Length: 262
Length: 272
Image 1 (cartoon, helix red, strand yellow):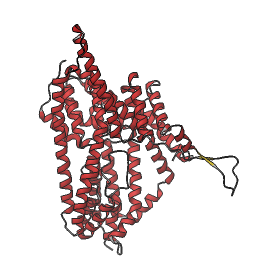
Image 2: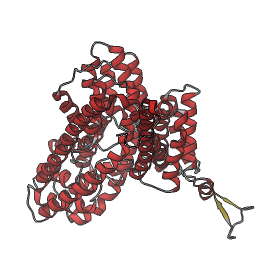
Image 3: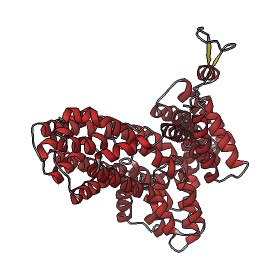
Image 4: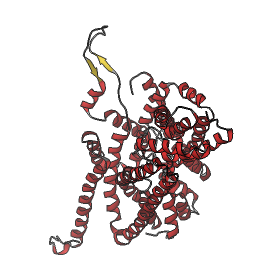
């Protein structure tokens, strides 16, 4: 069994913090192939790390940066925890490390949901800071999620490296019911954001378009791109019609229809 | 219309590069909303520098819900900057900003996450499999050079388009932002119906519960879906709308209510 020194554990923690934050930056560091490379570098076993990273990368392919609303199992599971297991625990192959680390990948996904939920009050705090014209505080709130990511990333990498058993016991401590509740709440929270924009955008004459959007998404299950295109049809028609009207009005003198208004 | 015309090309590039910060404040209330304001911060500061109240107000209105692909964001921010720098109010910019959100997320996500990333990922993972140590680093390099190029190209294109649009179309700006608002509202309503997730887990047994006897059950979610799909999410969004608009409730209160409600309803086994 390979033992991990305190310094190595700290280095792995820092590496995880950097890679996990990189997910928000959109620089694709939170991929199994990158994560495991750092672990291999610190523990001086690059061949095993490369194997773990490559296998997990292919298994997790298609999971990108955290855009959209979906949170797939996190590559930190196989990338950090799995690689640690493969390098330190005798008998664990890169393949079995991938399956052994899947519970961690799922647990980290819940942890991430929890971070986003915890940060749901951020917009309000930022708005309060701006009311006091406290721009420093505004910037803090606008950056707080990534700071949390770095802290959580460090904790995961460090504890994973320093105390594998301890980490798995901590994961078991979080009540499943609470995780479930946080996911449910996380699903409901965007309603507030949408309601906020609607309070400024939804004028009376635009209500039909709100209904249209609902029908397209809920009944016709149209992807957002299609919804935008349908909206664009009405917008183009409206734009052309109102231009025509202006031209007709300005040329009103001779009362002729002008089709070549461009 | 009097503009500021304070921004140089360097300010556009700077804002383009700040697209990396778009998700720094990601949260479940307004997604990238805080990040959008953060990305615009230095440019806003330059435009409204002397007027702190205006700067605070602009940042606050720009913190509303936003969600798009970070690599295509510079297209939006460049158009936004061009318009703002020419003196257009946020009210006139908002429609275009919101209308572009959905399509750019669609194009951007499919390109960067489902095309570029899997492509590089397979190439470099197979190299790593064969023991080529530098494969992970080359993966990062290839991925990020490509994404940076996309950011710079769409940012530059947005700036050109934004400036042209203002020169040629300033008289029609009202119509354009009205038309853009139509797309924006359509998209946002559609997103609200798909992004907000509420699923009733309870099914009622028809009649008295009897042990060991197979009973017909009524699945409430299926029933609701028959009334109207995504009924609960839409009703909840409308409730939030009502509480903000008519009751003047702050988002902080609403977040608290929602989190407590979510945990409670999940605990009672009603939502799941």
